[in-house]
Amino acid sequence: MLPTLREVLAMPAFREADVEVLTGDPDAVSVRWVHSSEVYEMGGLLSGGEVLLTTGLGLHGRSAAQLTAYVDQLADAGCVALALEIGRSFFEVPVEFVDAARRRGLVLVALGAIVPFERMVEDFHDLLIRRKVGSPRAGEPVWQELLGLVVAGQGMTSLLNAVSRLAGCEVEFVDTDGQVVERSRIVTGQGRGERTVAEVRGPTGPLGRLVLAARPTQRRTAVAERAAVAVALELGRHPDHGARPSLAHAVITDLANGLLTSEGDLVERLSAAGWVATDEHVLVAAVDVDGRTPVRDAVPVVQEAVQSVLGNCLVGSAGHHVIVLAHGWRHALPARVRASFAEAYDAMRVAETGQALRTLGVAAPVAEFADVAGAVAQARDVVQVARRFGTRSGVLLARDVGTQRLLGSVDSAALSSFITEQLGPLIAFDAQHSADLVRTLDAHLANGGSKTRTALALGIRRQSLYARLERIAKLLGADLDDPAQTTSLGLALTAWRMRTGLDPQAAFDRPH
Image 1 (cartoon, one colour):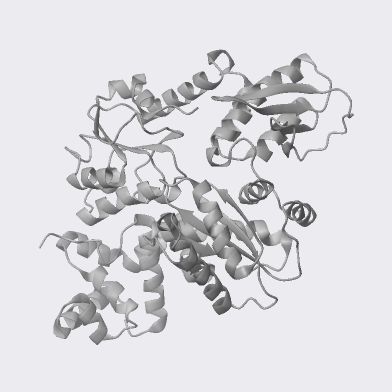
Image 2 (image 1 turned 90 degrees about the vertical axis):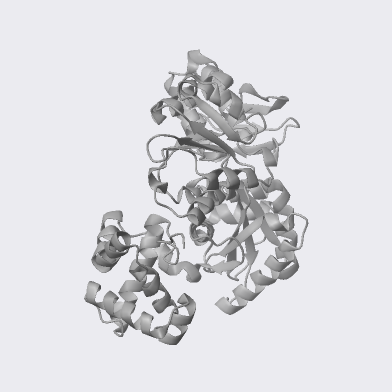
């Protein structure tokens, strides 16, 4: 069982930080991990159950709307608590944090004294180990390796593969009914005679047994005992699926973790899960689920909706995403793919838990089964990009966020250099003079260069717009009527938003 936030706040490093709980109930939430980050767009990098520590460095100077959006993004990602250090970037907790955290049910904590965040993370790591295995095992290489896989979220198959390698034999996890839930993918050549068995127990009782296909030895028994605890931890990471995940969920988990890339293995496991391969394209989608809603509640809703439009499909989950594999067509045109998933999405949203379903991201259709794992990663990437850009509903194809995905693959230093090259003087001018030139350029490009529509969108007179555009062109040394130059500027604005989390239309908002 994961520790409550109350237990985490009682750890030595937190006690030294003079903790004050401003909103929420620390006894009501469980903590999966503790992170520290100063990145504004951190919400898109979380997977749920985290306490986020920050000094507020990446939040200083943000507008009220941006501070509220920051808390909303954390809540959407399933973050359970935000801990803000007072005294570096903020002398008091912004009222926007308090209001948004209370509205979203997020625990908000003020840290009145400066304590290195690294110590807090280390204390939590030690707490997790003590709760599950006791301190004597903490330093053992075997246990550290297995715990590392669980903490990294590598999935059950990776965990059993590691156990298989450490024990030198094949490994199975069977449930309390004796049914195989998952087995290692490593073939060792050990005989099928004797077995080494360790019981897997959870907080409410037995969850199953870990079966090592080889005779017991001192080392093998030790590995089995530690592996049984690691398996219980791994099952605890997926409480929505119980002790025995379905075959469909196991396939989805392995695809999401990049562990199932062989076409033959995938076809065999899809067939076992009741999804027969055809020569049609495979459609892969991911639905982002509000972190406050159990994924298990969303899976049947998504499955019923997609099945009503596209027929038999395979549905499972990974993190806070529901993953869908569906049969497409031999000619999977983008318009047809969009229309089909839009119809399914509308059906999902009218269900009882429909409002918890956020963006539905669709990967490019794939013709080869060896490419399905990549399509799963692409669909999840689409909804992650959507979350970072504040999109919380609707259907997006991979091509809709192609620019953002392409820029995200560029070397960080090269991207920063490109942003500075294209927009540096403009950003510096706005920051120094509290001007609106970045916002004006963004609106001008969004409206296809139409001065009439741009002035209307900004709520200013055309003469004022002309003056702003002239200043922009002078600062950047750019011709705003040159398609090549405006394309580069548009890419730079998108990259800047990706790097900073700022919306060009609100980046330099000021009180009226």
